[in-house]
Amino acid sequence: MKGVLVLAGTPIGDITDAPARLGTELVAADVIAAEDTRRLRRLTQGLGVQPAGRVVSYFEGNESARTPELVDALVGGARVLLVTDAGMPSVSDPGYRLVAAAVERGIRVTAVPGPSAVLTALALSGLPVDRFCFEGFLPRKAGERRSRLAEVAGERRTLVYFEAPHRLDDTLAAMAEVFGAERRAAVCRELTKTYEEVKRGPLKELAAWAAEGGVRGEITIVVEGAPEPGPADLTPGELAGLVAEREAAGEHRKEAIAAVAAAVGLPKREVFDAVVAAKRGAAAQG
Image (cartoon, rainbow, N blue to C red; front, side, top):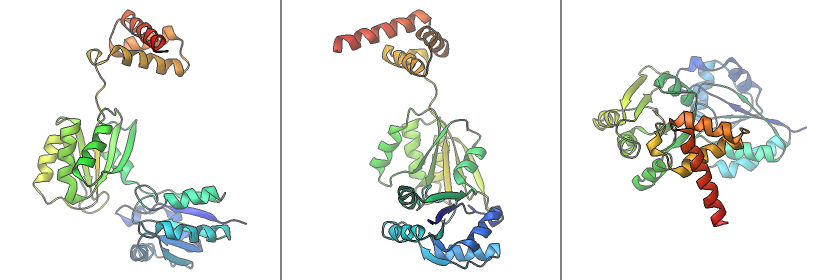
């Protein structure tokens, strides 16, 4: 019988947030793959458990080399527990390669849900949480960072980023430049820890605050999505595209045109003309 890979969510700060099942899995595992074995030791001591299985390191530097070894253990029937320093493995942490390799070999993968810096920051931000996207860490180089931000400047969902404290001021300044100085955001640091802080405001104000220095700890940035474009901002091609999206979702064209017109505040005739013009343009190119 093949084994099972267990992805274990670990506390992002307060150890008492650890799910009860985490202790059980730490004891039951045949192999524990830990991002930092020293942190694992502190975790098990804090939970009052003593792992019986073999402990191996599994971090960015050895992830590629160690994955085949762990897959072999899984194929041989082992219960492998993967833990990272904080939060859920594979979310900006080691784990993706192992999960992908296990899935490819038909090995069962399950999880012990735990605290999440992404969801915690979203909930505390005061920004819309009904739709969001996680962007992880931005590139360290200024040009690459700005290009990555430009790719999502028009994204209407709330954006979530991780960032290192020594790069926070540069990142917020770049966000203010690319997204707009008045775009709302929240900087969440040291979540669930003693010095937890959530700083909210326009990006320009947050950038000035960070530039003063002294911001420390684990940081998550939540940024408001781009505003919905007004009627004057939409080209005929974009109007036709909105109608096409609704048609693709199953709406009849008449209803789709009416819905788009109502959503953007334009007469139905103007939206209809945009659809006709788009079809004529497509036919001419064909």
